[in-house]
Length: 170
Image (cartoon, rainbow, N blue to C red; front, side):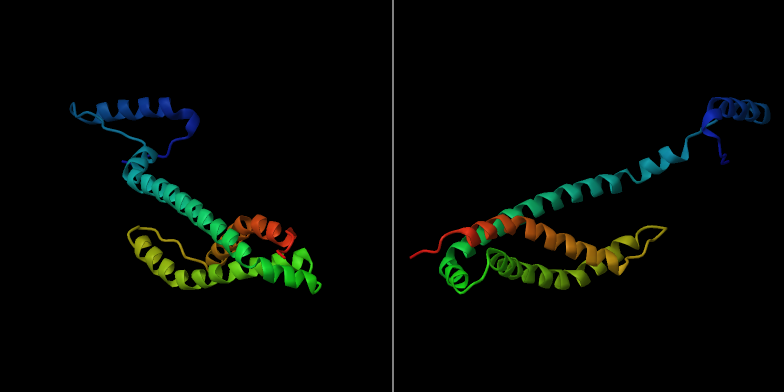
């Protein structure tokens, strides 16, 4: 049997159900549970999996940011003379930063375009294991690409700004 119980009348309702059960059945114990507890128990593995995937994704983003920061430092160092020539020809520091940010944004956007189909099919396969399914809207993939670009910009912007503001080598 299933009962919907108001939150403020739980003890009284359970007592009334127990009394009705004892009156109608010959000594069979009443086994009851809350459906929310049952669902939490059933989906505990999925919840743990979600936390683990989130933590590992955070570590992966951190490692990627460290690599991107190192690549930005290396690229800025290698292009010091080019930056000096651009500044001597009239480019502002903002123009140089914009150029360097665009250089690091292009691979992020290409990686997103390559990853979208794989992510779509992997999520579609995973979601088919559930009784109720949700859609995968396109805006979610665009938001992920925007977040990746913002993370890349945040990682590279300081190094790019320092490279654009530095004095060119003689």
